[in-house]
Image (cartoon, rainbow, N blue to C red; front, side, top):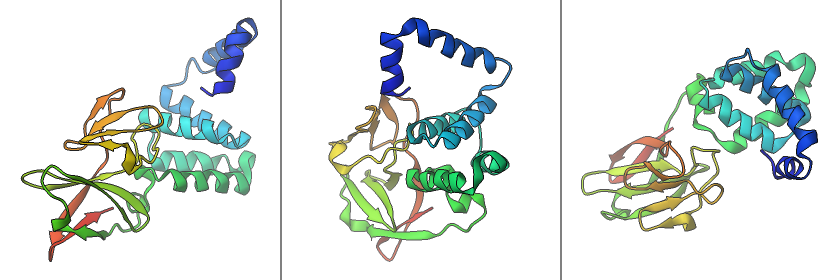
Length: 208
């Protein structure tokens, strides 16, 4: 919910309560995935960026696939028009959600040269940029681990300054992660996205 809606609910509760009751009743017979897909379309129609980001993540969380979301956008073409669909697609690309990567939608994935494998020392986490993607690299005693810098909550890019020791905290909603395991240790319930990797000729390569 936006700060503006929160404000209106606080200062005009009697006026706002019927509105939210109407929305709840209007979608009572819809499953959560369908309800959130429709909300994605309405946010694109209104070109409400924060709302689009919010309901896109909710739709994915409720089981909608990237293909279903793209199909929903294109099926709404008569109402949305190409300009609004392109607007939404620009946001999708900016959010860099793993499920929408071209490789998962039919385009080939590839290996990317991240860094020299020897740069990371045991127990050390590094922040790197590679081919337009930001990553965190952590070395255990046995292996290297490569994580997407995007928070799985609302795909906020977590900056390297958010790393304290092995604790990585997203600045937006304060989900915290153990960089060693990738697991969420505070606020949320989903781990960091971990990329497949390999070492060749002492170079760390990651696959996306």
